[in-house]
Image 1 (tube, rainbow, N blue to C red):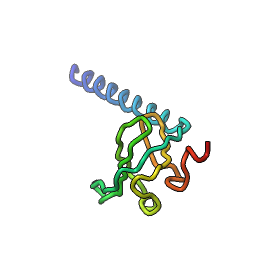
Image 2: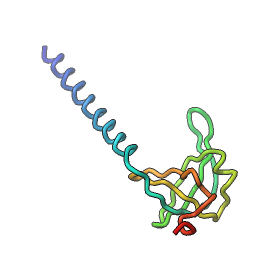
Image 3: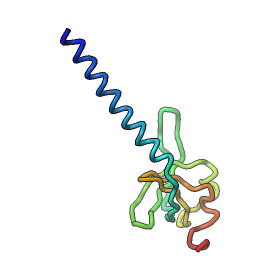
Length: 108
C-alpha cells in the first residue's frame, strides 16, 4: 500500500513540474517581442537529430555573442558585419522577418 502512495505522489509532483514549464512557455510566447539590433559575426551550421540547420552568430547591442538558428533565406540576404534586426522575447532571440533588409537605427 505504501508503494502505491509513493508512486502517486511522485506522479503528481512530475505532472506539477510539467504544468509549470508549460505555463512558463505560454507566457514567453504571448509576450510582445522587443526589436533589438545586432551585428553579424559569422555563419555556420548546427547538427541536430533531423539534419544540419544554418546558424548565425551575432553580437548584440549589450555586447553578448549569441548563436541563432536561421532560415536559409536569412543567410542569402545577410552578410558578415551587417546590422540585423532580432526579436527578443524574454531571453529568446530570433531573426525578425525583415532581418538584414532594414535596421532599427534607420527607422528612428
